[in-house]
Length: 136
Image (cartoon, rainbow, N blue to C red; front, top):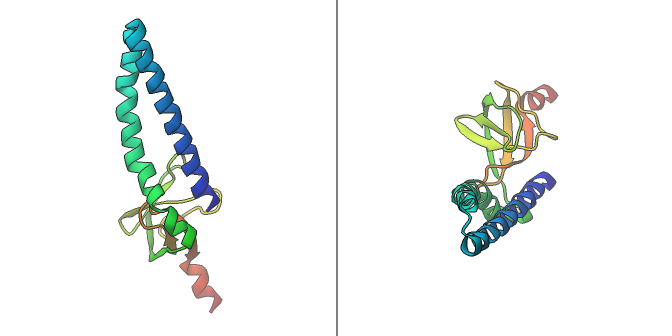
């Protein structure tokens, strides 16, 4: 869960920085009539808005589920994994899930039972199906 909270805090700090830059840019455009800052604002507002809407709002909605550990469960087979980066995603039975790359490395064609947050589909816990069957 620390990774989930850490990425959420980082994203919120990023938005605060963007809002600050937009306000500073607007002041410069109004006072000094500099068009370079206007271009920055025109680019920054849609990018920050899209990123906030698509990535951060689902995480904010998931805070109450994370605090109560109210998780959804899904069993399936990993179809595709992507390179780790800002958004660490893999596909399990046609649905994309986010994960912590330091604790979980999904392997293609392996079966997993995922415990995840409903809005962001962030995987909190997982169990590999092959290990469960070999223990019995």
